[in-house]
Amino acid sequence: MDFQPFHNWIPGSSRPLVVAGPCSAESEVQVMQTARALAQIPAVKVFRAGIWKPRTRPGQFEGVGTAGLVWLRQVKEETGLLTTVEVAKPSHVTEALNHGIDILWIGARTVVNPFSMQELAEALAGTDIPVMVKNPVNPDLKLWMGAIERLFKTGITRIAAVHRGFYQAEKTQYRNAPLWEIPIELMRQMPGLPVLCDPSHISGNRTLIPRISQQAMDLEMDGLMVETHPDPDKAWTDAVQQVTPETLGNILGNLILREKKGSHEFERNLEQLRHEIDLIDYEMIRLLAKRMNIAEEMGQYKYSHNITILQLERWKELFADRIKKGSKAGLDTRFLAALLRLVHEQSIQIQTNVMNRREEE
Image 1 (cartoon, rainbow, N blue to C red):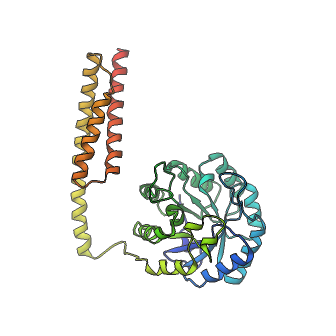
Image 2: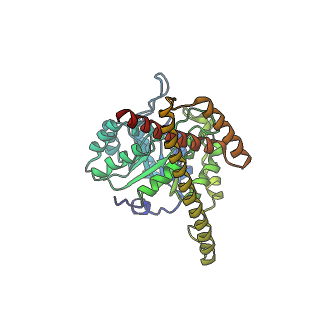
Image 3: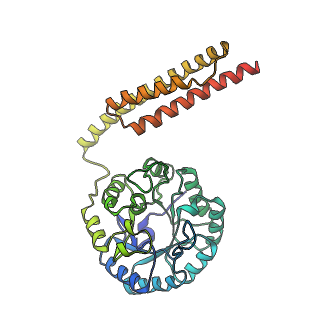
């Protein structure tokens, strides 16, 4: 797929491209006050505001609806900022296009549903309007890619991905887990696709936005989508994760934009370190293959002696022991736990396959 870079569809844009504005459009005064302040920040090229805001449970503020589109048209006329809104169904697309909205974005709860994505893709066919696609709520790269592919197949080529983090069952400092490996893999599989980071939704807390924004830049993302409000503590939705335009300006001013490549000496030294990693990876692969061969032997031995595949007490002891040793070696315990579970699952699968084959003989 041949994606268009931001500078081809957003005039005057450079890295980082910044999309900013309130979580929800609340009033004409609030929208215009925010837009006028953001227009003074050179990196901000696009003004965002939620117009349709269906909540998890009914009875809460669910957006001002079509009235907000009129305010956004005024934003564009007065400030020159491009405008974007979230759309979740074909009627939203129609209304946004009728009011001259420049860019659409599709939210996490919509992207997770292929039926909704197909309806939106069909509604967008022939429009060639730029569309930003947030990652689905759950950490499923294929769903994210599928949403992008559905749009591309209808003729939309100005597409960007927005990394807004993923739902997590366990409580951490983040509202949504960053899981950086997923957008990194998206960039690998879809080269040339512009990618923004939404630090507001990842953090759920304005104090974390600078750190997440810097990390996004260090991972070669193209820009940021930041929720911005003139008086965040009084915002009608997601108050704790919004910042003032002044704070946004400070965050952007403190960003360090590192080079993608260095001097010849730097590249030479870096290549040596990469070579060492390659050798370690090859050794890891060899050892994993050897471990799985032993797992197959264990499956044969257990079958011959009529022993269950899963030895739960042994697995508990092994897991605790490896976590303890890994922690002493300086490894992150969450990473090590995930790795151990993957290896164990594969070992169980190999032994299951052995049992099945022997039963069929």
